[in-house]
Length: 463
Image (tube, rainbow, N blue to C red; front, side, top):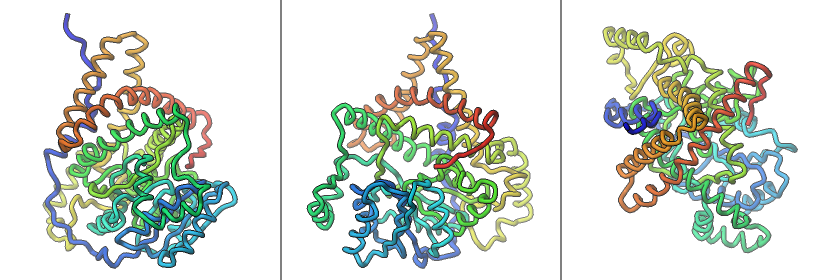
């Protein structure tokens, strides 16, 4: 009997990344309009109940090679002593211009980011979550530098990995001031207090997220960067924005949406920037470490991210259906080439495209291929897996999982240095069944989304 055929092992976005890697980058030499060294940077730190570890976040900002013009900690109605700890740290570091903006009750991250985009005066708004540490001392410098490689670049982020207990130990040991601070505050523990079972579950989550970040950063995002010159949206825990771009964005959508953008603001912002013809880029050689949700909160976090993607697709259908306008875009590109517009441009920028939402409505955007394929995969993959389970096609499902693990291990072997290869190979094996489970959860999220837009029709999508 012939062997069963595995379903949907290689996703369309994987194919796009492969083509991007084979194709290579656009060879246009950028001629930036502005010098990134002249840019002023405001660091905005949203925080909620971070008294035990906010010092590690602030210390990582203190060690940055590019110093911030202002550092604003947005305390979102914390019930602990986050504000008091920040004030004490600020008193010890007169060289850090730290300010605190606080609310009596939690209102979410989006209103604070919007407020600072309007009230601050820096050229760059760097948003850093309070539970995130900038591992690379040049993280802000490199992302700001990347922002100024072209006028069309609106956001830049680095690579992200899970923040572990060992990482907190290293961060504390790296600074004598931080060590002294914790000695003076023995009631604060930078280590999370968990029982053995919760510790085990959180370790599994970290393994899964570590491999996911590795695969996205080193393969999927690299391919998208090479093929389209950007990614769908920045990783929101540590991202640099052109402030004027996101200020205009908030002003445009506030009359219709207010603060209820989507359940994850960075995904909405990424889509909205693409809609205007801007790009979200990733810098591969700088790293941030972010606290991952505990196992009992993982589904909630996945729900927020996946829901935000679907919600953003709903708000920006022109991006979703861009692939169906590929012939219009090709004709437009031929028209520009025949009129020699490209050569007449004084500003040469790789992956340059026309700005404005009117252009998107008429011609779409190349990044729409990735968005459409991601949407199709998010809906069809769980349906196929569920159908195999309901039909009890265990052999086909086993071949599907096995084929995917084989492909992931092959890609991992190619992408990783030999010293880290074995580490990520076994993580690929562990991560795959978790991904299949979470894929089935995507079906629940999609049904909830349909209920929102067809039955409830009263969108309160906010992080």
